[in-house]
Image (cartoon, each protein chain N blue to C red):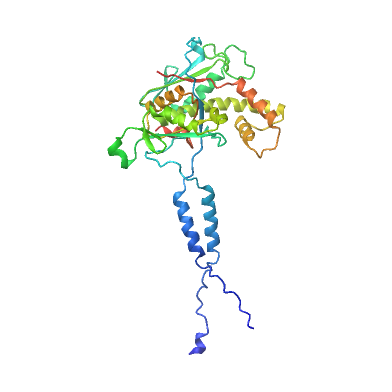
Length: 202
Length: 160
């Protein structure tokens, strides 16, 4: 009996099918953006005991309807904001902050724990400008935190890691290292340079 | 004559397309993996601003999205050119935000409710007035964790 071999399946159209699927996925794909600036809104409590903050401990930023900045009652370009904010936070007016390297200007903030950055915007302010300012303020905090992380990191066994890297590593499941210890360092830095950032709401 | 035909004309041999399916499949798999099917059809313009001090949104925690921006071309006649809020698949009013959040919460397991993050996807041309109103509404319903979702890039380029 003649042995009949099974006919081979023609795979010539496989490419066409694959192309079809490819084009479908190309069209439907939107690479979803999933990063951003995290913020916490203040709770709606009516505890109106006015906290008294010394004027020199507040760094006021006002963005007007034409996206112009008024920082500490003076006009400022956005590109200078990060430096100004970092200087304000790092000032160390009362000398209680051992890790600050500021100018110790008595008319600026006492220490990072007391320093508050206050942001006010108008209804006409564009969202893009608002985000830019938020970004610069966060950048100022991160700058100081990074510096602090590079200082205390080596003592705690995390050399060469800035604050951002520490946070990334803490979240990264593949990172091998002592996460509990890292968390302690992160919390310590967060406590030393707290983000005291308030927004004015009319 | 046939004697001469034997000789090849010396042209290039055809390129083999046998590996074409493999290449296409490779691309296909990339797009299949990278694809996130849109949950909502956008009725508004939604070009997000950019920032560089961004943190990743934690996917482990539940996220609700609130979109804001100017209505896109098709809806201009009906909804005007001012920035509007979009919740799920519909245009909404500031007053609807509270109801939206409670609906989102109702769909969650109880222990996850405090971790609900509200992602604000706001067009960069929108004005802060509407964003401020939404934030105020979120405070009223105690949804305090928010995230200004942005692209990654130089934030200073937002202000011209």
